[in-house]
Image (cartoon, rainbow, N blue to C red):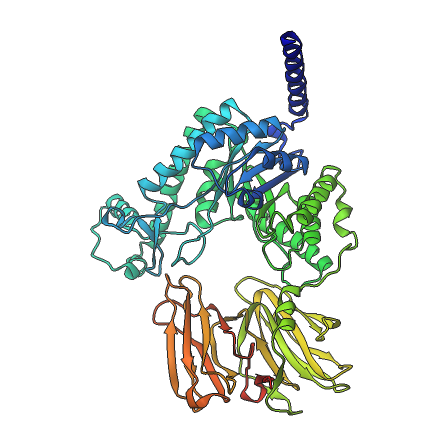
Length: 627
């Protein structure tokens, strides 16, 4: 009997070995990834979250079976035993593995980090070790060189995925731009043989400009970055010269473009550039087919920066199911479109829940991987199988809320003061059957962006009524003739640009229950406080150095409450007693805070108030009070 068991055990072991060997034989060569074989990377936050933020073998197996060729778990880079274990699983299932790690390290608040933290040109300091500090490079090197050492023995560990997004408070952009910390200022002064005066943080860049030294300082700092990057690449090459760096967000920050590009990319190990600018649709309300074309154009434009640098690189466009407009079917076809014009795609896989929506997304990504492997690029243009409803998450909130109606009825055209909105916003219209609605919108350019303004109208039953687009830096008119009296919803998104409502011939208000996004604030926004309210709540949000002050005014125009965000406190809320002014129209303003710049900001109205704010007191909406 023992002999029989032994023979069975040996046979099973042999069969397992054959299975693993078969997978290994089918494994794509590492040097082919992104060259002759499209990259298909999943940065996993969904399966990991389901398992309590740890990586388990079934996750790697699931990624391989879905057709991904690189698995990168969001959590676990610092546990080297876990890294080795995941690399072995990747080898077992014939795919590759990259530990994911942030490219930033939190600095302590004590004196040991004074003068060594990230310091922006504005004088804003962040609680991160500067890219110029020894501490930053010691931390970065300790992990990456160890990964390269493992890679030498297990080629399934192909590289590291480095995230240079700025998640810390008080920033002015992603990481890294020039820093004006003591470390680099001191090194520069020593190299020039000059003595630095005592300079406040916000006076350092102006002083360099006044002395005619800023251009030299910039080149000095870039050279310093390149020396540090070069040293790390050399240390990695001693272990595995084919070890690759994947960096996000591409095309890149100054640190990435001016240093990483040239020092971490080699012919043997081209840098992988992970672009996030096609995560979803160019704007939430952009139709599926137009969004596919827009994303292709974005990638072709962005990768030209790497082309112009003349480096060896692999370019991959990213997808994030958590962003608005990135439904499962669109995400799958977006993956095919991305891979058609680049060297592959990657997913920052967040948003779906493993026990509910994961299956639908996984189905479409599996479909996409099959099309990509077959180079069936026409699949991106196939008609949709699932209904397209760009704003369903917003509409559900509206449909489930209290009924609202304008407090005044007028057929007059109302011209609004210029209030510029960002991102996706929803407006509420009160229209009458047979009376043509006309709303004038303006698409405002922002920086270098040229997004179209996309709009649509739906009735209270979520049925499509009208839709259209307005070119960048142009005005257009939303027009339709209602079939019935009622509330209509106007959704608009200018993508990376901005828009304003110039005038309307029907009552119009901005839906603000989940937040209305603005740029450069708003001088006055009007809202009704119900008669039954004892108090109400408003919230304002900025973003790091883009701060905002929220003022609240009673019906007589008196300032009754005020609060402001700071670089470290990005959201503030005001709870205001209604008092004798319940049942009347109040107003709020988003204006400049004491510190920072007034740019992107948002306003949110609390429960108990009507869900809208208006650009004019004539167009204020109120709730239909329950009897």
